[in-house]
Length: 356
Image (cartoon, rainbow, N blue to C red; front, side, top):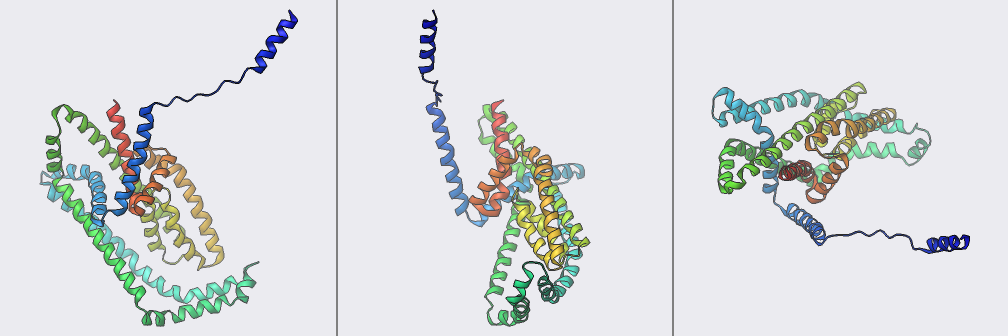
């Protein structure tokens, strides 16, 4: 009996371990390949799309987000949608003009002072431990002072930077006007366009398509509202820290950070770089303090504020939001990152609605 038990134990030990078998259906592989192919097509199309198409995409998202406000205002005033759109546009223009009036004077004054303060700040950096002596030996303060003094002559001799800046500003203003015109047109004629699309859909599918469209609209609206709130918080934080620590151009930097913060996940860090660099012009200690405070704020924003206000709006996890933003950046730059997350959230909402 013991011999039999030993033989059984040997056979058990000699038995090969169970293998993990993954059974993939052909349809699963087809869907996976189709997903990668669709992604490649989207990247190619967005990358080669003209600015008009990009402006139309941004305008479509803005019009979807503003449609509830315009509809409610038109209903309360018992007026055509064009009047409601005009009121919303005037309110936005007044808010932008007021912000510019508050920001422009101190920004110009601080910019003039910044030119005189930079050489002194660079000179004070030579007193830093470890790197201060090396900066002094390399003549960094004298080189910085000479570079600032020679800047007007270089610009007078070579107008290429000025022409490039003017060209960039012209393209930016043109793109902004296109977005505003498309947004106004979509807001005014939105119900008319939706009616045409509905009539083109077979009757048996209209109810399902309408539910999916409403779900996508709600996701985009919540996303825009949440993103604007997060961007406003980032701007207020930058303004408060900048004013307390006397960072130059603090109001302008606050607007800059707010605009960049609209780009999910990666925009806040990109927008904070000029803020930290200008903080170093006050003193090295001020620069370090601003860098630490801004990094801490980014951690709070990315892990608490963004998931609470934006992540819930689009029902996407932080990794999914990051992936969508990175894919958008690779496909269409900053504009692609702005559009990627709400479109991904809308696509998920449509998919979930179709599964019901």
